[in-house]
Image 1 (cartoon, rainbow, N blue to C red):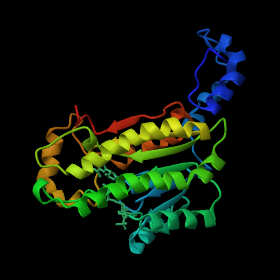
Image 2: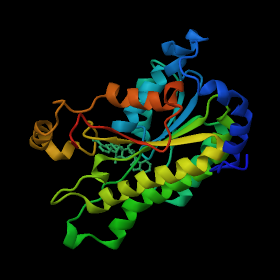
Image 3: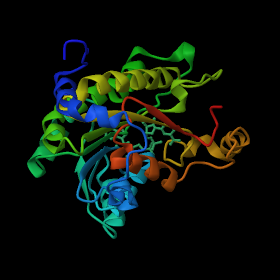
Image 4: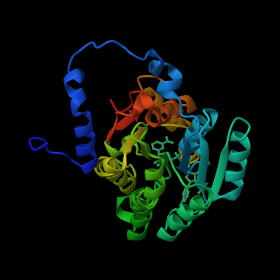
Length: 293
Ligand SMILES: NC(=O)c1ccc[n+]([C@@H]2O[C@H](COP(=O)([O-])OP(=O)(O)OC[C@H]3O[C@@H](n4cnc5c(N)ncnc54)[C@H](OP(=O)(O)O)[C@@H]3O)[C@@H](O)[C@H]2O)c1
């Protein structure tokens, strides 16, 4: 063990328990002993898991919720407006198990209340999707410190503390064969620039991306992976005011020639939540039809 440096005690234990397999593992083209493990249900199946999606009542969060619910995940969505929550729960409950927790995640008190409300119903959490985010408004000259804090509190600080406070349930769900998953929703804005884009938002998303990598390193010891999704344009309440002309301009700059769909977003979230995505850790996966190229 002395000649290896391990990032975490779990990695050290895992390595030692695997060490007798290493000699076999480095031999290429071993026989495929279990073709069953390669079937779609085994690679991408998520049925029986429990997920919580912040901001699951609209846009990207609702898309991920729909994909989870349709594939047998008991899915909790969290947001502020009761009528939106009720309508999405009604819609998604037609094909699976969708539940809601009303909450405002812009404050630490709101974060704690959400974790308590979830803890009253469930003892384990397989998948946490940190999706909700504020864009903020205001040009460079008129941006206020309060506006900056609103964006960073929701997008970065409370994403971190929600993850921290859900650790007991995530750890309880995680097994050696199937680690728990944290998925942070970033934005291609984290890595692109524009003359009049939302500065605090884009900076906060860059922070989310590095936080994702840091969390991946630290959560590994609890058998939890942490990855990010960086979307391009997906139809969402916050995009609607940008109007058709902006969407058309976006399309002109997008090689795939269309906006994102529920299948695009849901499929990626399913991948990251399933056996197929179990070896992906600390990565930000862009889904933008090539726009950021
Ligand atoms: N759509 C895109 O094209 C796109 C592109 C890049 C990145 N993203 C990212 O995707 C994520 C979701 O955005 P979206 O575009 O899907 O927005 P959206 O359609 O406006 O949905 C936002 C969701 O978050 C909830 N929410 C807002 N503030 C909240 C708070 N303080 N506490 C709890 N819930 C809150 C909203 O419900 P209530 O208002 O009822 O609380 C709603 O469910 C964000 O992180 C965003 O940066 C989206």
